Image (cartoon, rainbow, N blue to C red):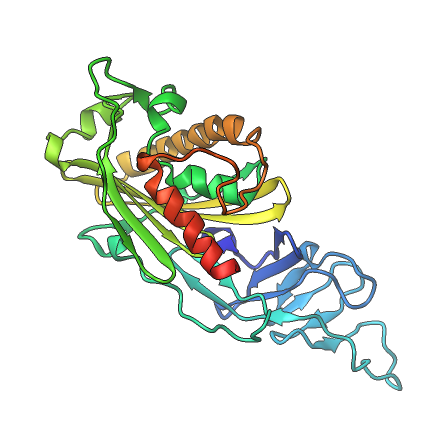
Amino acid sequence: MALSSQLTDKPFAISFVLGELVAVRHSDGAVHVYNAKCAHRGCSLSGGWSQNNHLVCPYHGWQYDTNGVCTHIPALRQDESIPTRARVKSYICEEKYGYLWVWIPGQSASPTYEIDPIPELDFPKMTHLPTADLSYHFHSHFSRSIENGIDPTHAPFTHGKSIGKVDPTTDLTFPKYEMNNTERSLFAQMPIKVKKLNGIAKYLMRGDQDDVYKAYRYIYPNLLMSLVNFGRFTIISLQVHVPTGEKDTNMLCTNYRNFLRKSPILTPWFNKVTISTGENIALEDDRIIKDQEPAAITYQGSNEILVESDRILIEFRRLMRQHLG
């Protein structure tokens, strides 16, 4: 997967645990995804370019059409033909929610389900701000970074510098919250315990006790939504966690909000604030989760002691067991 905002006519390398892909937006606006290694000498096609809706290898100029078939080899004589094996694998892909989604064939060569809907993105005035997109490399297994992203109780202790301090009078006991589960997703809404916000946020994000809340949505296998609501202001962060190794995960984040969407001065400024805050939050999380043991969750509990406030994590592990067996 990749952020749509990362994709241009310059091929973009996508790393994941099973290898490397390359994505390119051709002149017709469509994005195509290929195996990253040229069929000729195995160099990376991410160093190439798009030409007439073909992907061109930077080493010897071999050209591949949108199906991955080589259609031109500059060095061939007129009496030579292009070898039938001269092709790279192409992948089915789709752009949605600010991401490029790629189907990696397993038991099925083509997608067996639609990309799940995210109802919160249909809230009034909710707008994706591509210039607030960000990515972060976690030094942890993707199961740990996903759980961290939907963990409801760590913010008061981990994010005092990036988000804000905890009011000394805050009751940190966590009320029971309801879970809304489907075959492929989880949803929960809960209170916010961080009340002393930092920076401009403390002026913008005000609300009464009843309209200050957060919500999490997890969609199997690696998408999560984090929503924060302060009165009439709502911010949504979508995160996709792409495993690139046993203890390496790329987190791709798109950001949505219903305020400061079109101001020529304040919008770009708040986008920068969003990126800076997101990077600081990820750094604070990474310092913690990179040392968790075991490094990867077994989905059977990992010998950890979970309590009622961890209900969404318990349900996450149940859902993963259900799909992974």
